[in-house]
Amino acid sequence: MTSLANATILPLAEFQPSHFALSAVGKVATVTLNRPEKKNPLTFASYRELTDFFLAAQKDEQVKAIVVTGAGGNFSSGGDVFEIIGPLVAMETKELLKFTRMTGDLVKAIRACPQPVIAAIDGICAGAGAIIAMASDLRFGTAESKIAFLFNRVGLAGCDMGACAMLPRIVGQGRAAELLYTGRVLRGDEAERWGFLNRLLSRDVVLAEAQTLAAELADGPTFANAMTKRMLEMEWAMSVESAIEAEAVAQALCMQTEDFARAYHAFAGKQKPVFEGN
Image (cartoon, helix red, strand yellow):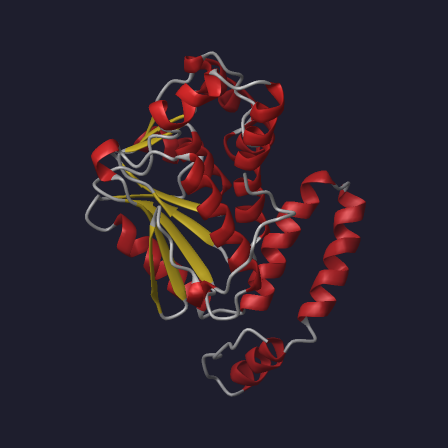
């Protein structure tokens, strides 16, 4: 099973996935979980391939934002019952730990890539699918979205792939506890009220709106955006004092970029800045 330590990293231009669809328009890549006949479940192979993709994104100079979505009116139903859960029942502890670490590697890779990641969610978004949405930077959904952290439904703890660390920071401790203890469905309108969804949109535009925002972010000061993502990640474990110092260093680095100078000169000339990510 792939881990962050031993994965082979390919440039995104050479990435040809077998277990999801990949397209690119301009500086935006769209990852589509693409097994619609089964509501886009994950398999051992798709976990590995998605992890490899986001590892490659960390080194890529062309793609500046990423959208993740699902085919056929659903995001993802999570781990495939017969291709993942069935084999897990027969594994021993050492193999199981390799698997759980491998699934966590996917979340680490999503969080570590410098590009903003936007999840466009419709229909079923459950189990590991809900985790991928949670790990994304922004989430757009529909009234038909059905988000569920189903781990307790199969006799497992809610502490899967970082859920106990990340979900409370998105929706709050009490709400996260409710979702992780019960595995109940969080529907689109409630998910927006709770802050899990950034925007609630109609099914016919949710993907397009996510791609539009991704394109706007990709045209922005991408070095600075990557720094924002990195600091959002790092500051979870910092005191306020440490965070202020870390942000001082980060912002000083951003002030050395050409994009910062471009913004100043554009403002002085009453023009819109054209950022180049350097």
